Length: 429
Image (cartoon, rainbow, N blue to C red; front, side, top):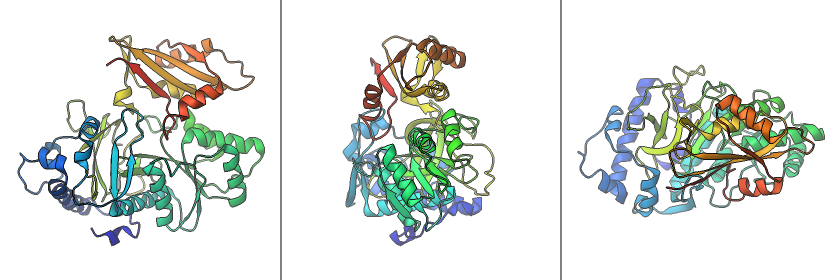
Protein backbone atom coordinates (compact mmCIF):
# COMPACT_ATOMS: atom_id res chain seq x y z
CA UNK A 1 0.00 0.00 0.00
CA UNK A 2 1.40 3.38 -0.96
CA UNK A 3 1.44 6.44 1.25
CA UNK A 4 -1.43 7.90 -0.79
CA UNK A 5 -3.63 5.01 0.37
CA UNK A 6 -3.62 6.49 3.88
CA UNK A 7 -4.88 9.88 2.67
CA UNK A 8 -8.57 8.92 2.88
CA UNK A 9 -9.92 7.06 5.95
CA UNK A 10 -11.53 3.86 4.67
CA UNK A 11 -13.19 1.34 6.97
CA UNK A 12 -12.45 -1.99 5.30
CA UNK A 13 -14.29 -3.92 8.00
CA UNK A 14 -17.41 -3.95 5.83
CA UNK A 15 -15.79 -6.29 3.30
CA UNK A 16 -16.70 -9.97 3.38
CA UNK A 17 -14.48 -12.37 5.31
CA UNK A 18 -12.89 -13.94 2.24
CA UNK A 19 -11.79 -10.53 0.96
CA UNK A 20 -10.46 -9.58 4.40
CA UNK A 21 -8.51 -12.84 4.68
CA UNK A 22 -6.94 -12.35 1.27
CA UNK A 23 -5.95 -8.77 2.10
CA UNK A 24 -4.57 -9.63 5.54
CA UNK A 25 -2.61 -12.59 4.15
CA UNK A 26 -0.97 -10.37 1.54
CA UNK A 27 -0.20 -7.62 4.06
CA UNK A 28 1.16 -10.12 6.59
CA UNK A 29 3.65 -11.54 4.11
CA UNK A 30 4.70 -8.06 3.00
CA UNK A 31 5.19 -7.20 6.67
CA UNK A 32 7.31 -10.30 7.37
CA UNK A 33 9.44 -9.58 4.31
CA UNK A 34 10.01 -6.03 5.56
CA UNK A 35 11.01 -7.39 8.99
CA UNK A 36 13.55 -9.79 7.49
CA UNK A 37 15.01 -7.10 5.26
CA UNK A 38 15.22 -4.16 7.66
CA UNK A 39 14.84 -5.20 11.32
CA UNK A 40 18.06 -6.48 12.97
CA UNK A 41 16.02 -8.17 15.70
CA UNK A 42 13.69 -10.06 13.35
CA UNK A 43 16.40 -10.83 10.84
CA UNK A 44 18.05 -12.86 13.60
CA UNK A 45 14.85 -14.22 15.18
CA UNK A 46 13.38 -15.45 11.89
CA UNK A 47 16.66 -16.65 10.38
CA UNK A 48 16.00 -20.32 11.06
CA UNK A 49 12.53 -20.31 9.57
CA UNK A 50 11.78 -20.98 5.88
CA UNK A 51 11.14 -17.90 3.76
CA UNK A 52 7.77 -18.71 2.24
CA UNK A 53 4.37 -17.12 2.10
CA UNK A 54 2.32 -17.85 5.21
CA UNK A 55 -1.39 -18.23 5.74
CA UNK A 56 -3.07 -16.48 8.66
CA UNK A 57 -3.13 -19.83 10.47
CA UNK A 58 0.64 -20.14 10.01
CA UNK A 59 1.16 -16.97 12.05
CA UNK A 60 0.78 -18.95 15.28
CA UNK A 61 3.93 -20.92 14.39
CA UNK A 62 6.12 -17.81 14.61
CA UNK A 63 7.77 -16.81 17.89
CA UNK A 64 6.24 -14.05 19.98
CA UNK A 65 7.91 -10.80 21.03
CA UNK A 66 7.68 -9.64 24.64
CA UNK A 67 8.03 -6.24 26.29
CA UNK A 68 11.22 -7.58 27.84
CA UNK A 69 12.61 -8.24 24.33
CA UNK A 70 11.80 -4.67 23.39
CA UNK A 71 13.50 -3.36 26.51
CA UNK A 72 16.64 -5.50 26.25
CA UNK A 73 17.15 -5.06 22.49
CA UNK A 74 15.47 -1.71 21.92
CA UNK A 75 17.76 -0.39 19.18
CA UNK A 76 17.68 -3.67 17.24
CA UNK A 77 13.96 -3.15 16.65
CA UNK A 78 14.56 0.09 14.72
CA UNK A 79 14.38 -0.75 11.03
CA UNK A 80 17.52 0.01 9.05
CA UNK A 81 17.23 2.37 6.10
CA UNK A 82 14.03 3.99 7.39
CA UNK A 83 14.08 7.71 8.13
CA UNK A 84 12.47 8.48 11.50
CA UNK A 85 10.02 11.39 11.50
CA UNK A 86 9.04 11.09 15.17
CA UNK A 87 10.75 9.56 18.21
CA UNK A 88 8.84 8.89 21.39
CA UNK A 89 8.82 6.62 24.41
CA UNK A 90 6.32 4.20 25.86
CA UNK A 91 4.55 5.51 28.96
CA UNK A 92 6.52 3.27 31.33
CA UNK A 93 3.36 2.50 33.29
CA UNK A 94 4.46 -1.08 33.94
CA UNK A 95 8.19 -0.94 33.26
CA UNK A 96 11.11 0.97 31.76
CA UNK A 97 10.10 3.32 28.91
CA UNK A 98 11.31 2.13 25.49
CA UNK A 99 12.09 4.23 22.45
CA UNK A 100 9.62 3.95 19.58
CA UNK A 101 10.36 5.32 16.12
CA UNK A 102 7.83 6.34 13.46
CA UNK A 103 8.52 7.17 9.83
CA UNK A 104 6.49 9.78 7.98
CA UNK A 105 4.41 6.98 6.49
CA UNK A 106 3.88 5.56 10.00
CA UNK A 107 2.51 8.94 11.10
CA UNK A 108 0.17 8.95 8.10
CA UNK A 109 -0.85 5.43 9.12
CA UNK A 110 -1.63 6.63 12.65
CA UNK A 111 -3.82 9.44 11.30
CA UNK A 112 -5.65 6.96 9.07
CA UNK A 113 -6.08 4.52 11.98
CA UNK A 114 -7.61 7.03 14.37
CA UNK A 115 -9.77 8.65 11.71
CA UNK A 116 -11.30 5.25 10.89
CA UNK A 117 -11.92 4.62 14.60
CA UNK A 118 -13.44 8.03 15.24
CA UNK A 119 -15.77 7.69 12.27
CA UNK A 120 -16.84 4.23 13.47
CA UNK A 121 -17.65 5.69 16.90
CA UNK A 122 -19.86 8.31 15.32
CA UNK A 123 -17.67 11.42 15.02
CA UNK A 124 -18.53 13.25 11.81
CA UNK A 125 -16.61 15.44 9.35
CA UNK A 126 -17.04 19.11 10.13
CA UNK A 127 -17.57 18.60 13.85
CA UNK A 128 -15.48 20.09 16.66
CA UNK A 129 -13.62 17.53 18.77
CA UNK A 130 -12.17 18.49 22.16
CA UNK A 131 -8.88 16.71 22.93
CA UNK A 132 -8.22 16.57 26.68
CA UNK A 133 -4.98 14.57 26.33
CA UNK A 134 -1.47 15.89 25.93
CA UNK A 135 0.23 16.09 22.55
CA UNK A 136 3.66 16.79 24.07
CA UNK A 137 5.91 14.82 26.48
CA UNK A 138 6.66 12.24 23.74
CA UNK A 139 3.05 11.01 23.88
CA UNK A 140 2.37 9.46 20.48
CA UNK A 141 -1.31 8.79 21.18
CA UNK A 142 -2.03 12.51 21.65
CA UNK A 143 -0.45 13.21 18.27
CA UNK A 144 -2.38 10.33 16.70
CA UNK A 145 -5.71 11.60 18.05
CA UNK A 146 -5.00 15.08 16.72
CA UNK A 147 -3.98 13.83 13.29
CA UNK A 148 -6.94 11.45 13.21
CA UNK A 149 -9.40 14.29 13.83
CA UNK A 150 -7.81 16.36 11.07
CA UNK A 151 -7.72 13.38 8.68
CA UNK A 152 -11.49 12.92 9.03
CA UNK A 153 -11.99 16.59 8.14
CA UNK A 154 -13.10 17.63 11.62
CA UNK A 155 -11.73 20.45 13.78
CA UNK A 156 -9.46 19.58 16.71
CA UNK A 157 -9.61 21.66 19.91
CA UNK A 158 -6.24 20.92 21.55
CA UNK A 159 -6.90 21.99 25.12
CA UNK A 160 -4.85 19.04 26.38
CA UNK A 161 -4.03 18.32 30.03
CA UNK A 162 -5.69 21.44 31.34
CA UNK A 163 -7.90 22.30 34.29
CA UNK A 164 -11.53 21.32 34.56
CA UNK A 165 -12.42 25.01 34.56
CA UNK A 166 -10.55 25.55 31.30
CA UNK A 167 -12.35 22.67 29.60
CA UNK A 168 -15.68 23.99 30.89
CA UNK A 169 -14.95 27.36 29.25
CA UNK A 170 -14.05 25.63 25.99
CA UNK A 171 -17.27 23.58 26.01
CA UNK A 172 -19.35 26.66 26.76
CA UNK A 173 -17.69 28.80 24.10
CA UNK A 174 -17.01 26.35 21.24
CA UNK A 175 -19.76 23.74 21.75
CA UNK A 176 -17.80 20.65 20.67
CA UNK A 177 -19.74 17.63 19.44
CA UNK A 178 -17.14 15.11 20.64
CA UNK A 179 -14.49 14.63 23.33
CA UNK A 180 -11.43 12.38 23.58
CA UNK A 181 -10.05 11.79 27.06
CA UNK A 182 -9.43 9.65 30.14
CA UNK A 183 -12.85 8.58 31.51
CA UNK A 184 -12.10 9.26 35.19
CA UNK A 185 -11.21 12.85 34.30
CA UNK A 186 -14.22 13.23 32.02
CA UNK A 187 -16.54 12.01 34.77
CA UNK A 188 -15.19 14.78 37.03
CA UNK A 189 -15.58 17.24 34.17
CA UNK A 190 -19.20 16.17 33.70
CA UNK A 191 -19.91 16.63 37.41
CA UNK A 192 -18.34 20.09 37.35
CA UNK A 193 -20.37 21.13 34.30
CA UNK A 194 -23.57 19.96 35.98
CA UNK A 195 -22.74 21.77 39.23
CA UNK A 196 -21.93 25.00 37.39
CA UNK A 197 -24.93 24.80 35.10
CA UNK A 198 -22.79 24.69 31.95
CA UNK A 199 -24.73 23.38 28.95
CA UNK A 200 -22.77 20.39 27.57
CA UNK A 201 -25.59 19.01 25.41
CA UNK A 202 -23.58 19.64 22.24
CA UNK A 203 -21.37 16.64 23.15
CA UNK A 204 -22.83 13.54 21.50
CA UNK A 205 -19.85 11.17 21.40
CA UNK A 206 -16.92 10.49 23.75
CA UNK A 207 -13.92 8.29 23.00
CA UNK A 208 -12.45 7.02 26.26
CA UNK A 209 -8.72 6.32 26.48
CA UNK A 210 -6.39 4.78 29.05
CA UNK A 211 -8.98 3.23 31.37
CA UNK A 212 -11.65 0.54 30.85
CA UNK A 213 -15.29 1.53 31.09
CA UNK A 214 -16.75 -1.96 30.60
CA UNK A 215 -16.85 -5.18 32.56
CA UNK A 216 -16.15 -8.61 31.10
CA UNK A 217 -19.84 -9.03 30.27
CA UNK A 218 -19.59 -5.73 28.30
CA UNK A 219 -21.82 -3.86 30.75
CA UNK A 220 -20.63 -0.47 31.95
CA UNK A 221 -18.42 -0.22 35.01
CA UNK A 222 -19.40 2.29 37.73
CA UNK A 223 -17.02 4.73 36.02
CA UNK A 224 -18.76 4.18 32.69
CA UNK A 225 -22.12 4.64 34.39
CA UNK A 226 -20.98 7.97 35.82
CA UNK A 227 -20.14 9.17 32.32
CA UNK A 228 -23.55 8.05 31.09
CA UNK A 229 -25.32 10.21 33.69
CA UNK A 230 -23.84 13.30 32.03
CA UNK A 231 -23.66 12.13 28.41
CA UNK A 232 -26.15 9.28 27.82
CA UNK A 233 -25.02 6.61 25.34
CA UNK A 234 -22.04 8.72 24.33
CA UNK A 235 -19.06 6.79 25.75
CA UNK A 236 -17.03 4.57 23.41
CA UNK A 237 -14.07 2.56 24.63
CA UNK A 238 -10.78 2.26 22.75
CA UNK A 239 -7.63 0.20 23.21
CA UNK A 240 -4.14 1.11 22.00
CA UNK A 241 -0.46 1.15 22.92
CA UNK A 242 2.58 3.02 21.63
CA UNK A 243 4.27 -0.22 20.56
CA UNK A 244 1.51 -1.56 18.33
CA UNK A 245 0.86 1.85 16.72
CA UNK A 246 -2.80 0.90 16.29
CA UNK A 247 -6.01 1.56 18.21
CA UNK A 248 -9.17 -0.52 18.35
CA UNK A 249 -12.25 1.68 18.81
CA UNK A 250 -15.82 0.67 19.53
CA UNK A 251 -18.32 1.25 16.77
CA UNK A 252 -21.72 2.75 17.50
CA UNK A 253 -22.96 -0.60 18.82
CA UNK A 254 -20.45 -0.19 21.71
CA UNK A 255 -19.80 -3.90 22.07
CA UNK A 256 -16.02 -4.16 21.68
CA UNK A 257 -13.25 -2.45 19.77
CA UNK A 258 -12.72 -3.31 16.10
CA UNK A 259 -9.09 -3.72 14.93
CA UNK A 260 -8.67 -1.95 11.56
CA UNK A 261 -8.57 -4.85 9.11
CA UNK A 262 -5.62 -3.55 7.12
CA UNK A 263 -3.54 -2.46 10.13
CA UNK A 264 -3.50 -5.28 12.67
CA UNK A 265 -3.95 -8.99 13.32
CA UNK A 266 -5.00 -9.73 16.91
CA UNK A 267 -4.55 -12.97 18.83
CA UNK A 268 -5.39 -13.89 22.42
CA UNK A 269 -2.77 -16.20 23.93
CA UNK A 270 -2.75 -18.45 26.98
CA UNK A 271 0.27 -18.28 29.35
CA UNK A 272 1.87 -21.17 27.44
CA UNK A 273 1.40 -19.41 24.09
CA UNK A 274 -1.65 -21.26 22.82
CA UNK A 275 -4.05 -19.26 20.61
CA UNK A 276 -7.37 -19.03 22.43
CA UNK A 277 -10.80 -18.95 20.77
CA UNK A 278 -13.22 -16.03 21.14
CA UNK A 279 -14.59 -15.67 24.65
CA UNK A 280 -11.54 -17.09 26.42
CA UNK A 281 -9.39 -14.69 28.43
CA UNK A 282 -5.67 -14.34 27.74
CA UNK A 283 -2.92 -11.95 26.71
CA UNK A 284 -3.59 -9.53 23.86
CA UNK A 285 -1.01 -10.21 21.14
CA UNK A 286 -0.83 -7.98 18.08
CA UNK A 287 0.95 -8.06 14.74
CA UNK A 288 0.68 -4.45 13.48
CA UNK A 289 0.66 -4.37 9.67
CA UNK A 290 2.14 -1.75 7.32
CA UNK A 291 4.58 -0.34 9.89
CA UNK A 292 7.92 0.90 8.54
CA UNK A 293 10.22 2.24 11.25
CA UNK A 294 9.65 -0.24 14.07
CA UNK A 295 7.79 -3.33 12.85
CA UNK A 296 6.69 -5.96 15.35
CA UNK A 297 5.55 -9.56 14.97
CA UNK A 298 3.20 -11.18 17.49
CA UNK A 299 3.87 -8.58 20.16
CA UNK A 300 2.61 -9.67 23.59
CA UNK A 301 1.20 -6.49 25.07
CA UNK A 302 0.93 -7.74 28.66
CA UNK A 303 -2.75 -6.72 28.68
CA UNK A 304 -5.43 -9.28 29.53
CA UNK A 305 -8.64 -9.41 27.48
CA UNK A 306 -10.58 -11.58 25.03
CA UNK A 307 -12.14 -11.55 21.59
CA UNK A 308 -15.89 -11.00 21.80
CA UNK A 309 -17.73 -14.09 20.48
CA UNK A 310 -20.13 -13.78 17.56
CA UNK A 311 -20.67 -11.10 14.96
CA UNK A 312 -21.02 -7.44 15.80
CA UNK A 313 -24.56 -6.13 15.22
CA UNK A 314 -23.02 -3.32 13.16
CA UNK A 315 -22.35 -5.78 10.33
CA UNK A 316 -18.55 -5.44 10.15
CA UNK A 317 -16.61 -8.64 9.51
CA UNK A 318 -13.69 -7.69 11.75
CA UNK A 319 -13.32 -9.25 15.22
CA UNK A 320 -13.83 -7.24 18.41
CA UNK A 321 -11.60 -6.99 21.44
CA UNK A 322 -13.25 -6.85 24.84
CA UNK A 323 -12.33 -4.56 27.74
CA UNK A 324 -8.89 -4.80 29.31
CA UNK A 325 -9.41 -6.83 32.48
CA UNK A 326 -5.93 -6.18 33.85
CA UNK A 327 -2.25 -6.32 33.08
CA UNK A 328 -0.15 -9.44 33.38
CA UNK A 329 2.46 -7.54 35.40
CA UNK A 330 -0.21 -6.26 37.81
CA UNK A 331 -1.76 -9.62 38.66
CA UNK A 332 -2.03 -10.00 42.44
CA UNK A 333 -1.87 -13.16 44.52
CA UNK A 334 -3.38 -12.49 47.92
CA UNK A 335 -3.74 -15.39 50.35
CA UNK A 336 -4.40 -17.90 47.60
CA UNK A 337 -6.64 -15.65 45.51
CA UNK A 338 -5.59 -14.29 42.11
CA UNK A 339 -7.05 -10.89 41.33
CA UNK A 340 -6.38 -7.79 39.23
CA UNK A 341 -6.40 -4.21 40.61
CA UNK A 342 -9.44 -3.32 38.48
CA UNK A 343 -11.55 -5.49 40.80
CA UNK A 344 -10.79 -3.05 43.63
CA UNK A 345 -11.01 0.02 41.42
CA UNK A 346 -14.51 -0.82 40.18
CA UNK A 347 -15.72 -0.95 43.80
CA UNK A 348 -14.07 2.38 44.67
CA UNK A 349 -15.63 4.01 41.60
CA UNK A 350 -19.05 3.10 43.01
CA UNK A 351 -18.60 4.48 46.56
CA UNK A 352 -20.10 7.97 47.00
CA UNK A 353 -17.59 10.34 48.51
CA UNK A 354 -14.47 8.64 47.11
CA UNK A 355 -12.83 11.25 44.91
CA UNK A 356 -9.55 9.54 44.01
CA UNK A 357 -7.53 6.47 44.90
CA UNK A 358 -4.45 4.36 44.26
CA UNK A 359 -3.12 0.97 45.28
CA UNK A 360 0.29 -0.11 46.58
CA UNK A 361 1.49 -3.69 46.55
CA UNK A 362 4.58 -5.07 48.31
CA UNK A 363 5.99 -8.38 49.51
CA UNK A 364 8.51 -10.99 48.53
CA UNK A 365 6.68 -14.19 49.44
CA UNK A 366 3.89 -16.17 47.77
CA UNK A 367 1.27 -13.70 49.02
CA UNK A 368 1.22 -10.03 48.05
CA UNK A 369 0.52 -7.30 50.59
CA UNK A 370 -1.89 -4.67 49.31
CA UNK A 371 -3.02 -1.29 50.66
CA UNK A 372 -5.58 1.12 49.22
CA UNK A 373 -5.17 4.90 49.54
CA UNK A 374 -8.23 7.09 49.01
CA UNK A 375 -9.20 10.75 48.87
CA UNK A 376 -12.63 11.62 50.24
CA UNK A 377 -14.81 14.52 49.21
CA UNK A 378 -15.05 17.35 51.69
CA UNK A 379 -17.79 16.57 54.18
CA UNK A 380 -18.01 12.89 53.24
CA UNK A 381 -19.11 10.66 56.11
CA UNK A 382 -17.71 7.39 54.73
CA UNK A 383 -14.95 5.85 56.84
CA UNK A 384 -11.90 3.76 55.86
CA UNK A 385 -13.41 0.79 57.69
CA UNK A 386 -16.59 1.05 55.63
CA UNK A 387 -14.56 1.18 52.42
CA UNK A 388 -12.59 -1.90 53.50
CA UNK A 389 -15.85 -3.77 54.13
CA UNK A 390 -17.26 -2.79 50.73
CA UNK A 391 -14.06 -4.05 49.08
CA UNK A 392 -14.33 -7.32 51.00
CA UNK A 393 -17.97 -7.79 50.04
CA UNK A 394 -17.00 -7.71 46.36
CA UNK A 395 -13.56 -9.40 46.38
CA UNK A 396 -13.63 -11.52 49.57
CA UNK A 397 -10.26 -10.00 50.44
CA UNK A 398 -9.54 -7.73 53.41
CA UNK A 399 -7.44 -4.80 52.21
CA UNK A 400 -6.48 -1.94 54.56
CA UNK A 401 -7.71 1.48 53.48
CA UNK A 402 -5.85 4.71 54.29
CA UNK A 403 -6.93 8.31 53.78
CA UNK A 404 -4.52 10.68 52.00
CA UNK A 405 -4.69 14.44 51.28
CA UNK A 406 -5.88 15.39 47.77
CA UNK A 407 -2.59 17.06 46.79
CA UNK A 408 -0.55 14.02 47.80
CA UNK A 409 -2.80 11.65 45.84
CA UNK A 410 -2.81 13.93 42.80
CA UNK A 411 0.98 14.00 42.74
CA UNK A 412 1.19 10.20 43.01
CA UNK A 413 -1.46 9.48 40.41
CA UNK A 414 -0.73 12.16 37.81
CA UNK A 415 2.86 13.17 38.49
CA UNK A 416 4.84 10.22 37.16
CA UNK A 417 3.30 9.32 33.82
CA UNK A 418 1.31 10.79 30.94
CA UNK A 419 -1.55 8.54 32.09
CA UNK A 420 -3.17 8.27 35.53
CA UNK A 421 -1.15 5.71 37.52
CA UNK A 422 -3.13 4.02 40.27
CA UNK A 423 -1.00 0.89 40.72
CA UNK A 424 2.38 1.08 42.47
CA UNK A 425 4.40 -2.10 42.62
CA UNK A 426 7.00 -2.44 45.40
CA UNK A 427 7.26 -6.23 45.28
CA UNK A 428 10.77 -7.61 45.38
CA UNK A 429 11.78 -9.60 42.32
